[in-house]
Image (cartoon, rainbow, N blue to C red):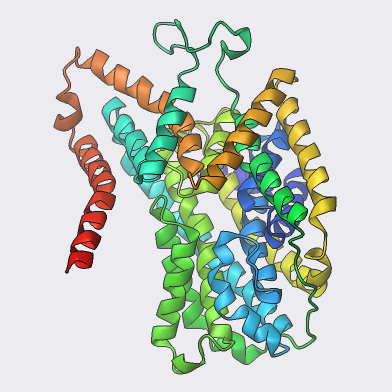
Length: 491
């Protein structure tokens, strides 16, 4: 085991992995800082560039992008009151007020250090919790894997629109060869569909091209960010020592919420903020420009990153939209997430752990440098940026199979993603359904083959039964919430 750990660390600190990590973090900060360039878009665009890379090197780049983008959202939230990412929404409660007081540098430094602490705490949780959870899941068979796949679908498809998106994704995943009989399904006699839809063009179109179209719409309407400058006064030692407990508490909250699939980074940030306010000696200062609030929100939202990787690696259930995209990246690398990943590819797993820690260290260094020129980063006009991004989308979509048909897939899913955004349909359920459908279908049919078509195999397995019951409760919860809200309204 020690040899595997050392080999994994050596892979993560190789020159190629370090450069990939640095590139990912740098691009991530830019993607996070600029509204319209989301973390999901950044990871989706980066996946085609990781083809041919060793697994640890590829994930060094992807994790760097993930960590950098989640942090980068705080820059615009603090300077101009516009969150670069959804994760930074809670940071706006204190950031703009500090900027108005001439303390933007202090706020940005606190956000950077808090993000680093949150990332490291979640990395420690990932290192110690993930292997134990994987060992517990080693006893899983076909019924249990089917139940886990169903649970992964229900946590993101509990609302009506989410369910519709998931059903569309399930249909799209059936295109191509039947995994058991080898029959053609839903190909419409198009040879390009015989092997199904390639995941990368779908990712690029759904999460990158769609967001480009939304941003172009803003550019056409003349929407732009106001100019802002960063003050010279930085953070003090007293600010740091006075927030040690706040850092740890908020990081633990973020990690725990990250472990629960589909809970959301925003939920972690707002919960950590409210807890920091509740335990504060000066709660009346909150909302008026309080660095304690920024310490809470930023440490919690970056802690979600490590927490969300735990169910991804151990069970194959992504914790959020970005880890859903990373699930696809794992499969593209020939790695199947789940407990067997820790047995069959231990060096890669420990390399990913080390790469995640390195990504947080690089985020701290790059972040402290970036905040000094943050005003220039956010001043890049969308009219200049979007043509570059759409070029990357075209290159990324084509590079997978060198196929012009994939460019058509990028265009179609870009349009579909744009319409989903405008009609308020969630995109993650569609993607997750496309990824999990083969797992659910294969294990469902395998379980029935083992049991000779006896469906009792799913409820005689205690683990599968519990997971399926939890999935049912997740689906019923919105109905119960609507019923309770109706009763309150009537009362």
